[in-house]
Image (tube, rainbow, N blue to C red; front, side):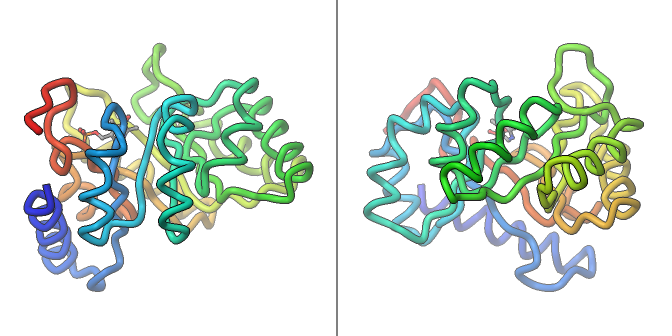
Length: 222
Ligand SMILES: *Cc1c(COP(=O)(O)O)cnc(C)c1O
């Protein structure tokens, strides 16, 4: 486990170097979905502090205890958010990467006020315009980010994308980087186990890596 984590970290460092990026400029979000607390603890013990989960309910079943033991952990929501789960998400997550519609922006703003707790926010962009996929359309991103900023007083810190499974991800990463530049948004969450080095070459500031650290999901080897 910690060997895999070490390998991913050294690949990230090499990708930073070859892209002419500053050392340490890319944040590793370790995606622990489907793995339980016993699988996650060794990764925490190896020094990893930033984790991603894609379901609010699943995250609630393991992270409150882990966060109590390690208060410096930063938890990212990287899966779609239903508005009836917003209160729970605002209470548990430090970063919500999947803001993608007005109702979610509004409920996050309301809950943040109520709870006195404001997670940092990314807007998810559906760079491949896939009908089944969450995220705002690329040509609506500017209006949506401005709506978040002006209507709901939400600071949008980053953009996030999941390129179509069967396409070269490069053009999708390039599109996200271009949108972020136009919007003056600092953070770019893009790249997963199969393509995080490519994403770093295109300017990712964080990569979301699951199976390369935890192993293949649903095939636990212990
Ligand atoms: C599962 C998931 C990942 C990690 O995928 P791997 O291929 O296991 O690295 C990254 N981002 C999102 C949004 C995910 O749901």
